[in-house]
Amino acid sequence: MPAIDLNSDLGESYGAWRMGDDAAMLAVVSSANIACGFHAGDPAGIYRTVKAAADRGVVIGAHVSYPDRVGFGRRDLDVTSEELIGDVIYQIGALKGLAAAAGTTARYVKPHGALYNRIAHDPKQGQAVIAAIKAIDPSLVLMGLANAPILDLAQKSGLKTVAEAFADRAYTPKGELVSRREAGAVLHDTQKIADRMVQLAREGTLEAIDGSIIKIEAQSICVHGDSPGAVAIAETIAKRFAAEGIAVSSFVPTV
Picture 1: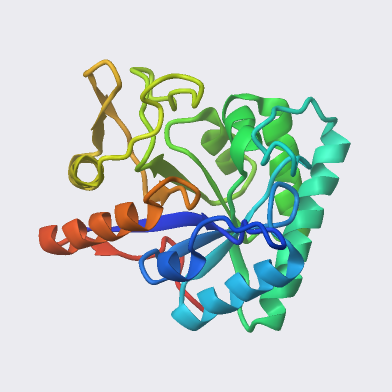
Picture 2: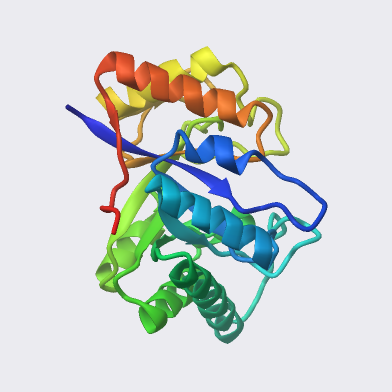
């Protein structure tokens, strides 16, 4: 039976401000990208989500970001390598501590928002993120955009990687994500999204925003936790996968 990972960005609520439905998403996904406090998430809420993931047997990863709570980590920052290395180590360390208290452990790192997009093609910041991961725990897997140079850079530096595609985002003919500033960048039709993800899992292809077919080799699919109807999207994908004989399982084993 073919298998693919289904992940979502969780732990992003902050105090009285609520983002997404972590409990519902954890009933569907196999991996959870947990906010580490720099773009979203407060310690109590992060800990609560980590414990819930552990109870569900969901693998967790550190969703590291630029220090940008006001912009939800979606504003590009021209930070120095030294600053970025420190920021990433700090965030991974924080999640590792909360995970240990919850009886689990972080198994991978997925950069968030602007940092994710920047390092996909910026070797300087990409190498800083890689250096941070290797400094704190070289066994961690780096999750990055499928077909992006960061994956080759990380592999050449000795890290394991996993390529990711996005269920609820449109792609350009070059295989890049359509900017959120452009119309049609975020997808909402659950059935159409599920159709696309079955095609991705079975054929390794997707339809780009211009109608062309592009090659996307990915081992993990992300449903953004803050997207409207995120739970419905994830549930529809999971149901279609079950009907099509596609298993949902993490790219790393639970411990």
